[in-house]
Image 1 (tube, each protein chain N blue to C red):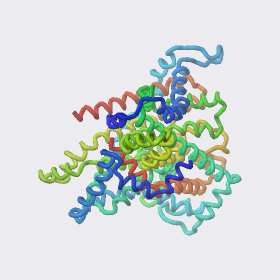
Image 2 (tube, each protein chain N blue to C red):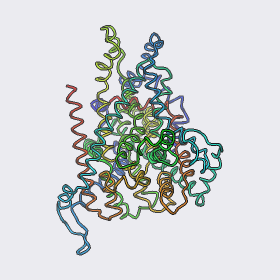
Image 3 (spheres, helix red, strand yellow):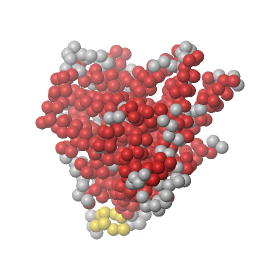
Length: 324
Length: 297
């Protein structure tokens, strides 16, 4: 975790790596070329804005943001307004803060517990996944070692296996190890990010010149020291991209915790909320749709904020990885 | 892949690489390889009340390939992927081309807004859409109040599959758009200049330069979408709670395997179902990939 914070605390450094420095032929070709291309394309043509494209994209925008707008609007409604006022506009009473207070108070504050569980799974699971993927991607890109080809074949082969095949045996194995219904059952499977490994591997091969590593070796630096003090900086955009996607995957995970956990005290937000929702739908229990809606909004907000805040970094990392 | 290999020229061959790859491989073995082997092992046994667990060879597989519930589920995800995946990818492609066209203002705003649903947890996405589909305080209810019951319920058995398709499209169209957009941004400027000199129009440029240039990204997105369709679980599983009559326990292969295991304790049979479904997925993904790369030649 200290690695992550030290990276994100130095935005200028990472930015310099993306745009200013030219780590290698390919990376500089792709990354540094873009600003050049953009100025060329924007100057004479920008005036010709296409109305058709604008309409098409506005419809897409409406489709994408409409449901989120619905979520925000309905999180401000009292329970009775939910049933009596049109869905796409605010009701007569503004109950957002009451709803938030009620969400956190319901069932002895179990929502806060789910929230903290989710944070734990994200910090350890996604943080660990990013670190492991970065180490391994870098190792595959920059070292020759006995068994490298086998590692390669195993990872590629296993990637082709749909995750659902593994869910049930994962549960059975973990239950034999006595790990089910503990945080470890959710965290350990989250530690593998094959997409992350691939992205770092492609990125490292191009962004870190072998000369740089060679020079550090001549200076007497050890391999791990080289990684943490030199290579990791060069890998920052890829690292943040992998982290972002691992955070989203862990924050949004549903299937795995649903299988692994049986007691609500370890639920993440997704499993907890869906249980509230199904309790609302079944007969005999008091429906709590306003809490499900407000809870959903509270689940969406942190992850969206993180995504928007870090967008510069993950977009450049994704660009480098997606062109292969 | 060949690009990554060139980086190796100067590195020494030693065990040092294992310091980096080792931790990943350790977890990978525990989380992926061991369960996979265990699934194969499980699928060859049967647990019966009399006699306990015993080896049955491929009997579970023989049962699975004549199981109408399994084929019902598989048929449904195939139908889903044949309809939903092309719609989603074409929408994503159109959006990416629009963003790349230089004829649109506020590109970053569009790009991030359309991508935003990807950050919404699948379960929350289903709950939002589920409420909107519903007849209590949803948009469908509003529409019917104004127009007089003209909109059929998306939660009815007839429309539940398109309703799920819409949710999945909403979640992933922005993600695929971003993949395509990133690939488009990497197309060398010289190619456009050459096309312009030849007098190619915007549409011509799209079809003869842009689309061929990002073929790789399109193939990858297609394969991931195919795998995603076969693994369909979250959306129907959560919707089932508000539309229990429209979604059976064997709505998708993944739901079937899940319900066999956790509602029926038939772990051995569930493992066989999961493996067959995985093999079908791999075959379809492989066919898609080889079709994609064949046309390239």
